Length: 266
Image (cartoon, rainbow, N blue to C red):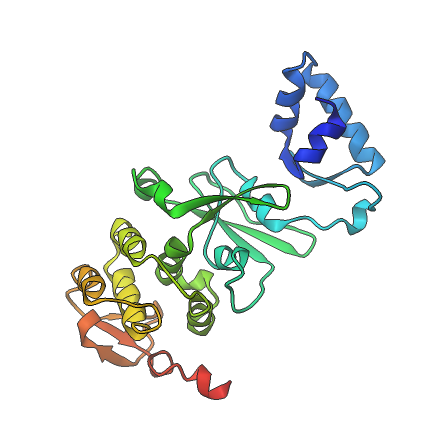
C-alpha cells in the first residue's frame, strides 16, 4: 500500500500500524521511518505525540487541520475506550461541550494535551477489565473515517454515577443523562452489578426512581438495584455534603439534587 493510500483510510494512526502496513509489502522499518519523516516535513502529517500521527487532508494547512479527539483517544492505547462525559459527548448527549476527554485503559498512562484538547486516562482495575461481560458495555463506531471504541450510554450512565468527578458535578451529570430518551435498563443494572459498588448502585437506583416515568422504569428494575444498595446510610457526594436521607437507597442526597434546583434557575 502506498503511503498516500494508507493516509486516506487512517486519519489517525500509530507508528506501529504504518510500519506493519509497509513491512507486509517488503519494506524495511527504516524505510518506513524515512517515509514518515518526509511526510511530516512536507506537512502531510501532524505528530500528535510520540508514535501517534494525524493525516492532513489535501489542500489543507497542517496548522489549521482539525484533529478528531475521539479517534485520538481510541488510539492512545490498544485497549483505550472513550468514557464518562466524553462518551455522552460522542453520542451528542452531553449538556455542556468539553475539551477534556477521559478514556479507559488497563495500562498506566499520563494525561497529555494537544492544542486545546486534554486527554485523561482512567485506569480500569483488572477485575472489571477482565470480566467476561465487559464487552457488553463497549461499542465500536465508524466515525470521521476511523473507528472509535466508546462505552455504551448504559455503561456511561453507571460510570458517571460511580465517578462523578469525571462528569462535571451533579447538575451536568443529571442534565446530560436527561438528554437520553431511552436506556436499556437491563444493561444499566447489569453494569451496576458488575461494578460491585453499593453506593454506586444506590446512586443508580435513586436516579432511575427520580426519572421513573420518563425512562419507563418498572418496579422490577428498582428492586434489582435496591438489593445492591448499602446497608447503612451513605452520602451521594464523596465530600459528605449534608442533605436528606432517601431511605430506600440509604443515600444522603443534597437538597439541590433532590429537588433539581438548577431547573428553578433556568
